[in-house]
Length: 202
Image (cartoon, rainbow, N blue to C red; front, side):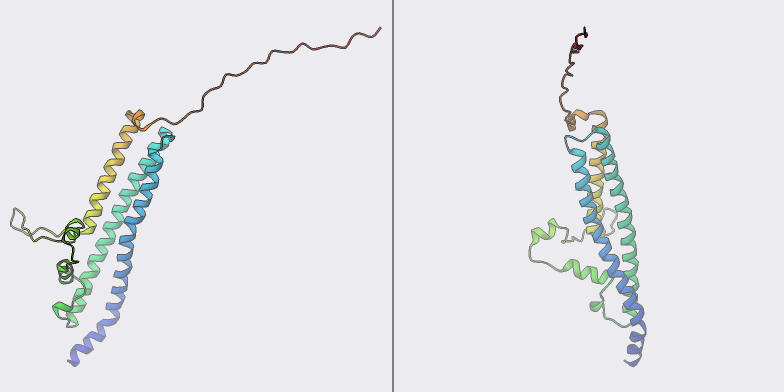
């Protein structure tokens, strides 16, 4: 027991540092989708407005596609860092003598979370909280569905929509509406008025 307590106290500073970093990365990971969706709503509003010029519409859609791509890259890198931090913390907990049911990181904790029911089966399946243990055709277990994977699918769908709108804006702009142009008023040409010269002096 004394050896375990000494080992746990030795690992505590490193464990606390990595845990704090993991919390920060996790917060950044789930801030990215909210910011991306807000940017998408703004850019799509500009692109689909009836009074938007064709060039401005194409630029807005291109920016939308670029933001989706950059957000996907950032989320993938942040998730990569979160996974390696979780593995590191799990190793610390195992070395410190935590029981399997006490592990707060890694696959064991993820499996406990996935088995936890919220009491509404329909909502669990609809929001990907319910994980089925199915085997693939090769006999290996399928990887569990994750919220990260759902967001990547959503980003891909939005990217395809932006691309389709760009094609429509270039080749079928009438489908997106034309910008309203004010009617041209005819220019009134004023006839020159004859100049009245003063009568000559006697």
